[in-house]
Length: 224
Ligand SMILES: N[C@@H](CCC(=O)N[C@@H](CS)C(=O)NCC(=O)O)C(=O)O
Image (cartoon, rainbow, N blue to C red):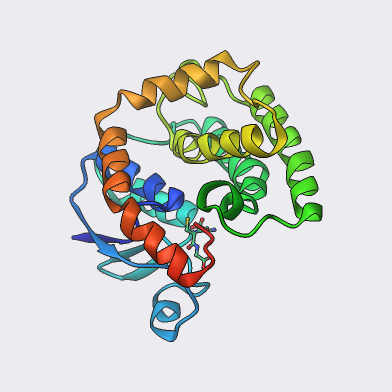
């Protein structure tokens, strides 16, 4: 059986978890926190979460894991069959990751964990990058009703578990609501809030939150 390593507060872990739940693929979760100790690096070369343990070995990097699951597991397809449409879904997912999730991430410690303030130069860059990232999302995404069109796809996993965090960063640090002129995006987040798999992931995250915050305080730093 597939084993998914990670922790419930990790947005990347939750992208893979949602894919497995929506495909109805049996899997076990294994508690695993990213860091640089040798046991972790033996499984995940950059010490990152998530990791998928397969019969053939360990896989890291969410996009590679999602592709592996898509190619090997039964259940609903998370990519269209047409090659151009598949590439479009992957491009949208990548744009959300690179231009929304990663710029927002530099501010997570300050915004979500009350930790050290983000250095001003990084904050300024995040603000500039997020404006462009959300402009790209508005330009590219369809919200019809899903991010890439009528089908629930890999792009929705990135959308769901990146945009909510970046929106909080925008509101709390920059006084901007990135979704103010994107009603389709807001409607999609509401649609996902009713999805039982999304609700299960949220409940697991809530249940693990006290232990996670304890760990963050103990470590004094986190990347979420
Ligand atoms: N590029 C990686 C990013 C994953 C990532 O940033 N994971 C965070 C948790 S959400 C992590 O492992 N942070 C621990 C660290 O950076 O030490 C992927 O796509 O899987």
